[in-house]
View 1 (tube, rainbow, N blue to C red):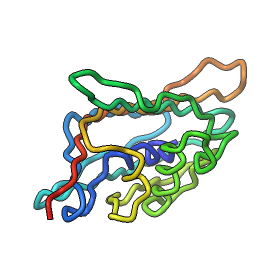
View 2: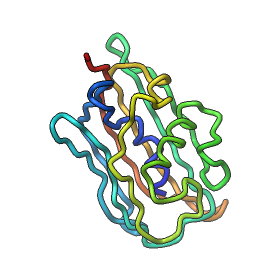
View 3: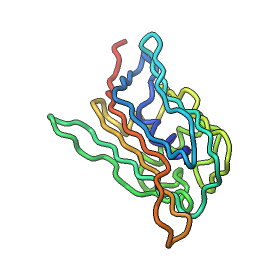
Length: 181
């Protein structure tokens, strides 16, 4: 489950200061303690930011896991939605998503994670290790400079008739801008 968090987390990662910079604010997250425990965090050192996570999944998650990323870009004082979809990671590999932003984030995330992006999600430790973007990242061509709000929620449906269970959710504000050389 934390796998999908890694997908959209990539949007808010630090880029090499000679190329671009991401500044974070207001990171908030909630983990369903019946399923997992751990931390989602931002590290900052010398104006370099990295996004990470260290989460322990306590029980197997299968059936349907719906990930709902919601990304908004601030344009002329108003937030406009860039991504707002439901993705069942038990049926669709995020790397194959029809949405180019989700697909690109999924591909980039595989460099920094120790888990599969598709379910089932087995008990164990799930890591997102200091995610950063380099100047060659295709994501930089899809996401313009500016201010953003991002939320990501994961909901588990063990069977089609079962009530939904929130696995995790997070929100973050960030700014992406090109650095001067």
